[in-house]
Amino acid sequence: MFTRTGRFVERKIIPTQIKVLDSILGGGIEERGIVLIVGTPGAGKTQLSIQIASQFKKHGYQIFYLDTEIAVTETRAKAFGLDLNDLIQYAPTIEELDEAIESELLPKLQDKKTLLVIDSISALSTKQEFSSLTDSIALGIKANLLTRLINKLFRYKIDYNLTVVITAHMKENISLTPFGATGLLTIKGKYRIPGGAALLYAANQMLYLITKETKELAGNVQIRFVEAGVVKNRLFTSGKSIKIAFSDKYGFFDLLSSLQFLVDYNVIESKQGRLKFPFTDKGLLIKDVITLYKNDTKFREQLDNLINTSAYEILVKPYMFEDNVSDSQTEMDILANVQETEDVLSTEDIDTNKKTKKKNHQLDELDIDI
Image (cartoon, rainbow, N blue to C red):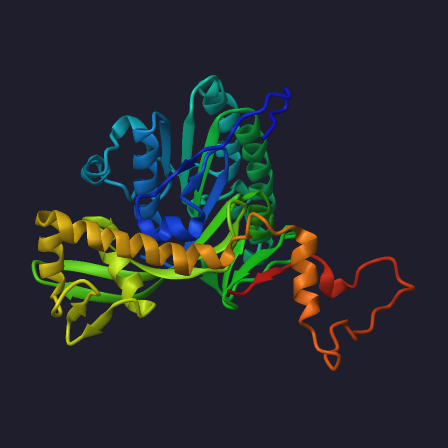
């Protein structure tokens, strides 16, 4: 990637340390990128952002974690390697945040690797929202102000070593007036985000989280299983989803998420609460798996190998191009298999006399269905 001054910089990948999630992300979070994490309430947006910030800090980044919902406690931050110096707990308007980025953040970006987390933009208000404007007009203005903010961050992440993680709530049944020309991003046909079109264009990676199931364990431990899906990814292919597990107290579980992946894709058998592995004689309870994984080196190596191999074969390899196949060869190979009776070319009529796009093709609303 080239900066505005013409200097070439190589981007690195920072893993989240959740193996199956890193597999569908193409290795992890892209440096010098904008990452958008959207989700339903309680689906783990903040928790994932905290763990991403923790990993970036281990790689020498200075952290600015803007907690607009005042939801991250000092205890929670410290549990994942962050401290109060990394946290900014404040709920500014979008206009105030725009000015603060220019006057306060920009001077601190010089020659320093930086991660900025905005958790979340959904909690950011606008000065106009406190006036007598209708809700739909206020949402439209908010979308336009978000567009300006995102465009500014987009410029800075190119010119400086800045990575940005943004979270947003997915809401149902919201609409915009013409003031919202930047549009709505619709996910899975029902969830929407104001300003989503601008967010989508600027984002290098976009991930959604939707709670699928919650289980109560002994000791008042609540585990949530969420569907994590990739909407956009400049590192790798998009459109894939997996199920990962977390708790508010302990964060996202790498091993449990990996075991869930192995069960979901029938790599291992789950019967009556016991897991049957290719290298074990009998089914094991989850607690037995964890005990063996911690204490038995051979078992750990075998399970890690099964997880890594399966994740590669199922989540990565099918979406990779072969090194020795050119684009033209790939196209020829595909078309060579078409039978004479198959009509490949489109029969859909278009109006060749009109040079402007039809209204329903405008980006007033951008729908992405996974």
